[in-house]
Every structure is written in structure tokens, then in C-alpha cells.
Image 1 (cartoon, one colour):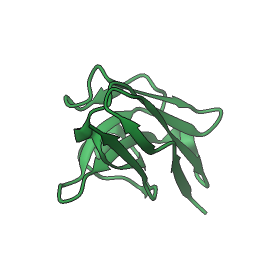
Image 2 (tube, one colour; image 1 turned 90 degrees about the horizontal axis):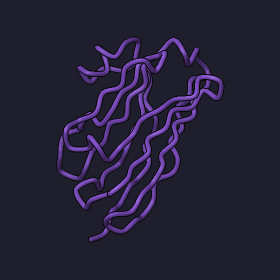
Image 3 (cartoon, helix red, strand yellow; image 1 turned 120 degrees about the vertical axis):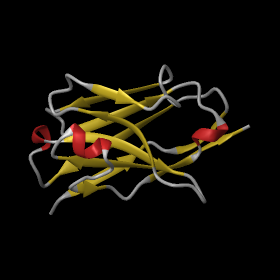
Image 4 (cartoon, one colour; image 1 turned 60 degrees about the vertical axis):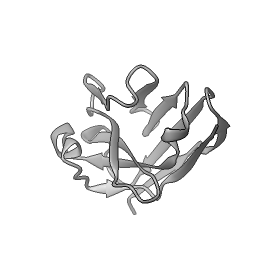
Length: 123
């Protein structure tokens, strides 16, 4: 059974930090690009960051550039999103996704999706 399980979300004050994890199982993790997406209430899903299968390429949305860092550990089948200097506008459900390529993730397409983890940033 394919699974992507996000963890690490929670409530944090403005300026705080959180580290999200995405644990994968049931497929060959290092064959896939991994992405983080988020969706706030009443808003469309937004691409946050994605990383190639070998971690040689990483993309960040302008809204998080310089504050968020994405990484992956293929030996642990896990991807991470370190979020620093959090702002209230970062409040959303964060989803990780696995795609056959960074291009597919950049278009919002993924083969597998996690269930999401809530991040709430209080002002």
C-alpha cells in the first residue's frame, strides 16, 4: 500500500519555526520527485516547494523563498520542509506529494498525495 504521511504541523507564533516531515512507503521513493503544497481555507492549492529525486534541484515559491528549506533523505524514504520566520499567511494544510518528475509537480500533478498536516501561525 502506498502511503505518504505528513507530520510536524502545529500551532506556532509569528516568527517561529516548524519542521514538516513526509514519510513514504509502498513505492520506490528515490524514483520520485517530492513536493510540498498548501491550501488555506477559501483559497486554491499553492505550490510551496519541490525537490528532484536526487535532490539536485529544488524549487521554492516566491512567497517562501529564503524562509523555507526543503530536503530529502532517500535512505529514510523521508522528505522534509524546514519552515522558519513563519507568518500568519503561511497558515494552511500542508500536503506532500510524489510525482514522476519535477515538471509534473510544477504543473500540480502527482502520482501520490498525503493526507495533510495543519500549520497555524498566530499573530
